[in-house]
Amino acid sequence: MIKGFIFDLDGVITDTAELHFLAWKALADDMGWQFDRDVNEKLRGVSRMDSIGIIMEHNTVSLPEDEVAALATKKNDIYVASLDQITTEDYLPGARELLTHLRQEGFKVALGSASKNSTKVLQQLNATKYFDVIGDGNSVSKSKPAPDIFLFGAEKLDLKPAECIVYEDAESGVDAAKAGGFFSVGIGPKDRVGHADVCFSSMKEATLFEVKSHFKELF
Image (tube, rainbow, N blue to C red; front, top):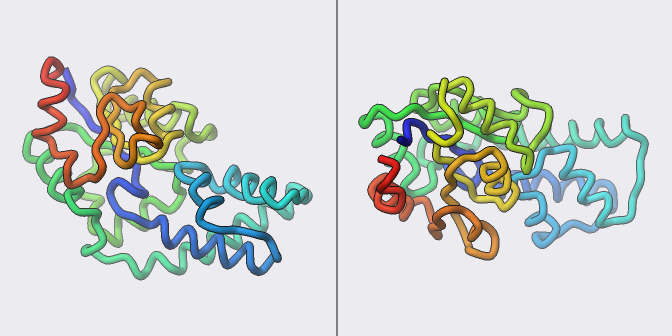
């Protein structure tokens, strides 16, 4: 039986992807590196340090570890400053309705995000009340596609992976859910998240009714 839900944040609850893109673009421009939306797509669901590694590899750049860490911090500072723009109007369509529905039906809910700024984003959205557990980039050392963040969430919810459904919009996130033994809902195009147990083009379509219909033997 499904007793809990675990949600990624970016691209599932709200879309901070554009703010991330602008922050990485500002850093890349400052460093004289090439960076565009194609490269940015490779960063979806990836941790900050792994992201800067992808950008550096794209530009055939190698730097000492301490300089890389400093640049990652600089990007994060740019990004965090932009989070003040987020309001309660910035839920993705369908996300707040789903979270409200889950609360009404008594399901346990956790966040499972690679972002270390998840708490700030949830506060801006006034969404903290929907979550029993906040799992983020500060909670585990291995980021997706390792399943650690979802396993952390399930453990804190006192549930087994097979009792949880994960909502993800990134290929690495679906990989992480599958690796951990979770059921998965993919949000986005099939070429990115089509390997999830069920895939929807948007959160608006991924209602509790639709998910229950697909996993009817589990409810």
